[in-house]
Image 1 (cartoon, rainbow, N blue to C red):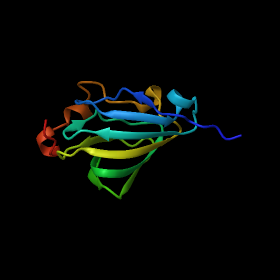
Image 2 (image 1 turned 120 degrees about the vertical axis):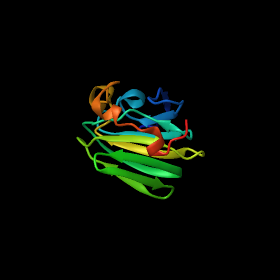
Image 3 (image 1 turned 90 degrees about the vertical axis):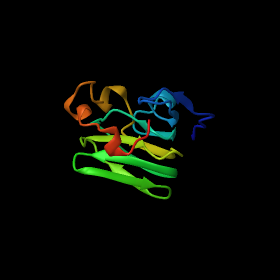
Image 4 (image 1 turned 180 degrees about the horizontal axis):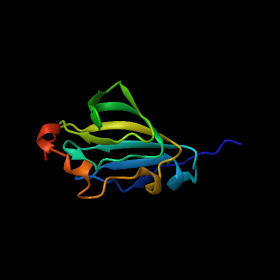
Length: 138
């Protein structure tokens, strides 16, 4: 029988500025370990620590632009575009433009703090962060 998800659960986000994460489907809101679906709204100048997750992440940008930094450079994903980050790849997400971004993220399997593997403060990849180079306005 289909199960109605009446409302999302607001999840606390990592990063330098407040970001809204509303999880509709996933471990936190629906006890679903196979997939997570979340609506994200990030302000301009937001950036989170890098990560090397054990899940694939599929992101569709609805408004604004999401920057995805990876080991070989970065991608600017604009409204109407999507990006796939495969498990095991190092990525760091940011929204450098003043208008921020709104997007839907789908993780397979579902997002988990135990499997996201965010960079620790002082880690080599975190030290590579050059906010000016990334174009993020704090």
